[in-house]
Amino acid sequence: MFAEERRQHILAALTRDGRVEVAALAERFAVSEDTVRRDLNTLAEQGFLQKTHGGAVALATARMDWQSRRSVLTEAKARIGTAAAELVEPHQTLFVDAGLTTLEFVRALQVRPLRIVTNSLDVAQVLADDGEVQLVLSGGEWFGRERHLSGPAALATVRAHRADLAILGACAVHPTLGVTATHPGDAEVKRAMFDGAARRVLLADRGKFDQVAPNFVARLDAFDLLITDAPPPDLGPAAPSVKLAE
Image (tube, rainbow, N blue to C red):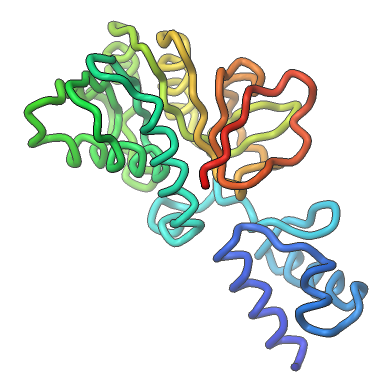
C-alpha cells in the first residue's frame, strides 16, 4: 500500500471512529509504528487531525459546521441519545440545548407528558406536533452554521424557567479546562440551562475529549453525569459519574 492510500484509510477511520491508535494502525497496515507516526504527522500538518498520546483524534469537530458534523460518529450519537432518554420521567421539565447528540436524545424520548425548553429549531421541529409535550422555544438570534438560537431573548427565556434535567451537548471536553463551546452565545445559553436545572447531564461522544473551544461553559466535575460512547481518558479525581452508551 502506498503512503497516500494508507493515509486515506487513516482519515476514513477517523471519520468513522473519531480517533485512531498508533499500535492498532501499525498492525492493520503491517508497518512500523514509526511509519504510522510519520503518517499522522503529515496529516496533522495538513490540518486533518490532532495528535494525542498514542494516536490521534479527528481535528476539532468543534470548529466544523453543523452539516460537516452530521457524518461524524452518527451511531455513537444515537446510542448516547438513547441512553440519556432512559433518565427521563413523566411530568418532568427539561432543558435541551442545540446539538446533534441532543437531537438524538429528543428523537429517542418515549416518556410523556413532558415540558421541554430549548433553543434549537431542530429539536422543536421533532416535538412540534406532539400533543403530550409542552414545548417552549426560546427567541433570539438564529445562527445557521451551528443551528442554535442565542442572544438576550434566548437567555431571558431560559432564565425564566427551572428544570428537573439539563441535557447539554459539548463542543469540547477537557479534564482541566472543562466543557467549552465554539460560539459565545451558545456558551451563554448552555450556562443558563446549567444554572437553572436540578440535575445536569452532559452528552459527549469520544471525539470531543481532550479538545478545547474558546468559550467556557462549566467545570467538568460540576456535571452530575457524563454519557459517552467509549471509556473516556483520565478525567481527573473530580470527574462526574460516567455512563457508557452501549
